[in-house]
Image: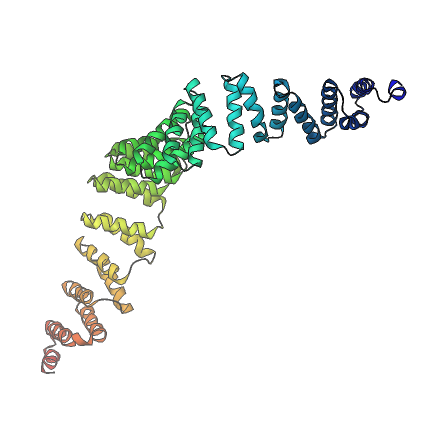
Length: 446
């Protein structure tokens, strides 16, 4: 009512606006006070008007309009730190930090040693692209608080942004060393820096420090590889073992652990872990690997026992069985070799040449009947070699089965016509032994 009666009385409009503000009638506040800004009046009223308009706009979610009135207030009262702090808070809310710069400059004149305000000022400088000034502020903070890793981390980041990588490294190193927790940002830069320059020992040191802060499989794996590269197999082994124990199903980790243990001559360890794994998984290839391990170490009896265990689990792995037969052959263990060659023969896995060799082994073991049977089968198929044919001939001759010996010769003439004269000569000898001298003479004459 007073406003209507006295429309030119500013104090009534200001008073009414305060009431409307409490009632959250923001539009009425704006309607009453905005025209007053165009008029000239006592400065104290202008302060009130700007304050009320700022609140009305901000509380009515008209952020930037409210901020503009706050900035006008600050122009009227440049050393009013309360207003400056309000402005800083509002700009921080919307993450436009560079706008806080002029306010921090004034605030810091009053509080030059306040670390919290200095740090906020640094953030505003970075947001405003004033990197060198930001570095200067950070150095000031470092002098005041030399064991705060946060400041070194920021310094490292700023120097890297300026492509001053060595200074970046120095500060990131300090941040990483001082930080009680694992500092991912510092670690990532330092790891890249050392790796790109081939500074493997520095990278190893970094990873060892990282492990003290964070027990990570990634760090163990990198250390295992790096120590291997540097020739420190004992340290490499420690990390492969940790990795395997924490992930025993990973075949790659298992193979690397075994490989490293072998290189360190940890044969008992290799045997134990292979056997343990084999018992757990029933994997025949692990038994086979154990066999190779002992074979290479000249402990062949034990090696053969593991080979046999593997074959018992994979009886139809003909390649492995053939390999085992060959190993027995190297050791002249013909009886064991025959067992595996017979199995292969029964499953039609032997070539003609291999069958002949099996026949030869039968001969060494005085098993003539089996020897003759194998050679005779090959002869019938037409795949008997000249040497095999001669062996069969002499076998029949030794047994006095001359008619069968003659049949072998006849078959030999058809299979190996270039050897006809040799076969005929043998034939004449057989005929003569049978008392058929006339036939023998005819062959000689021919």
